[in-house]
Amino acid sequence: MRTVYVNGDYVPEDQARVSVFDRGFLMADGVYEVTSVLDGKLVDFAGHAARLERSLGELDMASPVTMEDLLEIHRELVRVNGIDEGMVYLQITRGAPADRDFAFPDPAVTPSTLVLFTQSKPGLADNPAARKGMKVISVPDIRWGRRDIKTVQLLYPSMGKMMAKKAGVDDAWMVEDGVVTEGTSNNAYIVKGNTIVTRHLGHEILAGITRAAVLRFAREAQMVVEERAFSVDEAKGADEAFITSATTFVMPVVEIDGVALGGGVPGKVARRLREIYIEESRKAAV
Image (tube, rainbow, N blue to C red; front, side, top):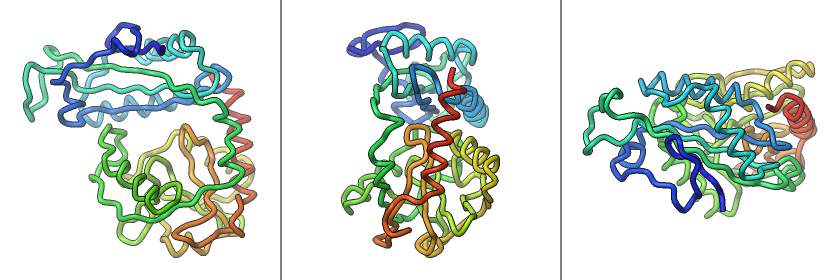
C-alpha cells in the first residue's frame, strides 16, 4: 500500500483524508504539479517548484511549506514507496474554511491544504508508444482565460481526452481562433524542414517545464525553433509533430484528424529530442 502525504503527515493511502469543505473540492481552488522520477531521482524539480510558486502567486494562495521542505517530502515519498520510474503528484488548495463561501478565507485562519502521492510507472523512459507514435484529433478550446496557471480545473481537458478516446485516437489538440493552443495535458509542436514550431508563451497555454528543457536542448543541438501560433491545416502539412509533458517526455505524433504525418511513423527530430531529453534528465535528476 502506498504512503501518501497529507498536511504534514505520511499516512497509508486508505487513511488519507481531506475535508469536504476544502476549496479544491468545492471550487477547484487549487494548483498542482507533477514531477517525473527516473532512476529514483526527481526530474527538473527546480523548474516545477518555480512554476508552483508562480501559480500560487497568481492566485494569491499561500504555500504551507518552503520549496526546500517540499523537495525533502518528494524524496521521502519516492524512498518509502520504492519508486524507480514514475511520478510524484502535488496539490495545494486554499484550504478548508468553516463553510462554503465564494470569498477567499483568511489564510491566517484557514491554512492551505497540501497533498502529495506517488505513481509507479515502470517503462516510463522506454515507452513503446514512443516507437509507434500517437494519433490526435483537434477540438475547440473552451477553457478559461488563464491557462498559464496550473490549476486543478481539468474538466475540459478530461472531456478532450474522452473525445479522443471515443474517436479511437490517443489525445486531442485544442484549437482557438483557428490556431492550436496545446494538447489536453501537454504542449504541441510541428516540424517543417529543419524548423520546430510551437505556440509562444502567454495566458493561452501552460509554460511547460519539459517544454522549456526540450527547446533549450533543441537550440543547443543547432535546431531552428520558432515560437508562434500554427493552424491545424499547417500541422496537417508538417513533416512531423510531437508533444512534450512531464510524464511523456517527448512523444511523436503521427496523425492529426486522420491525416498521417511523415508516412505515419515517428519523425527523426522527435526521436532525437526524446533521446537527448532522457539522457540529460538522467544526468541532472536530484
